[in-house]
Image 1 (cartoon, rainbow, N blue to C red):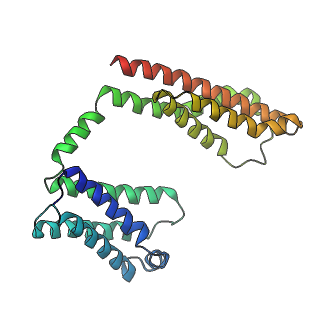
Image 2: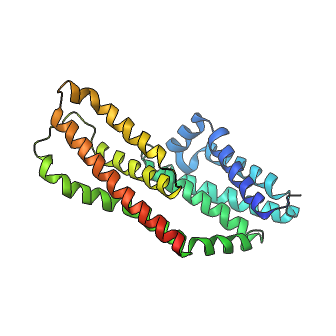
Image 3: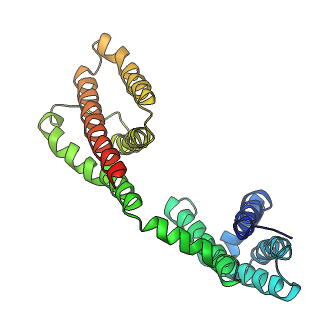
Length: 246
């Protein structure tokens, strides 16, 4: 018997990952994408998830309840994957939506079986706490809003920069990842890794700057990096201060 209700949820998540990524072959994926709801692999894949879910639930529930929960997980998995098989396989958004829907089903089934109500209540209380909301707000700010602000500030220098040899939107994506890491380090009170991150970014451009290749682009990138780091550090320090004050 499983002692903690949260253990059941963790086992359901592990079972999902095993079923979706370890026990599903590339041939099954191709068959689902080619034949959709008529795919034999689709039903085999859903059956695997149902069997794994039953193994988990049978450790903490009666046979009938475990079978019912496993059936819900298997059927919903089949429906979700059938819809996903019609979506473009190479787009990340559909992969994220697919996994998010599976996660919702697993959590809902876990709560519906009466094992996760209290845990969900604690999770909701934590999520709605002002400290948590403050951190969420900070992460949202350092993504698109800061990208737009930095782009507006840097616009006066962007006209003279030749970025024809760079990846489309790569700079904006790199900036978001940088700010995400910087904010995380600040909130974790770990400022040393920020120095290493800034040094690594500078080293990547040092050769071009020394050899006078793409000097304007190098200076433009470094200026944008310093601006991005400065804004995120300032916001992170303010959020950390307010976080302790709440």
